Length: 262
Image 1 (cartoon, rainbow, N blue to C red):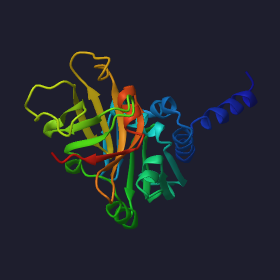
Image 2: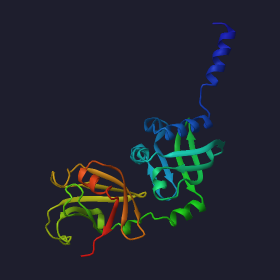
Image 3: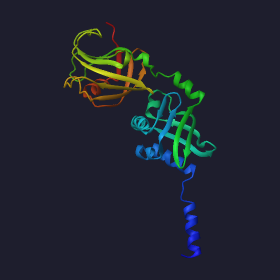
Image 4: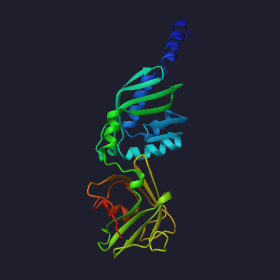
């Protein structure tokens, strides 16, 4: 091999590694195109993912679960990648998604920072600015305690009677159909579907449990919703996904649950 050829190969090898800003651009493009597999391939196994005070995830499994929901919500990150001593910052960073649009605070703005090690991402941290935090606190986004209780809507599946969705403490609940004005007390036996629920990062997840039922959905059925308060009382839901057709039909039409007063 000639000296010239060796020199050419040496130059090519020295330039094959991606620079920090290139990595950040690739990361941003993967997020904005909803390419979760590419995002995960850029992370170390114990990567840390934090979006202000609303979300903290550690490790690829937790981050993948978060991204699965955000993909449905069309998450977008805008900003100009600029290297700094901590990695790469996205200048004039903004975070937009259908979630922030639902709460009327789209986009959220602040600082976005990638931490890098050996061309892999070890952390992604977003901190919202004071204006975004103020707009979010003034919005109609529901707190977890405001979801507790019994909510009522018309049964649009059969157009007869009402549906009641009951959220109890410690993530327990049930879905009940009724033709009357009341439902059994929380501790009594009842006809209906037991469920578990969790409200995190402004996302409500409902999962049926117990024996399968054609009337009240299957055990594996999961519903994922955004929830906000309605000025006239009650909660408004936006279904991200729900494999239970009963909930899926009842909740979006209309997309509102009113308080049940026995």
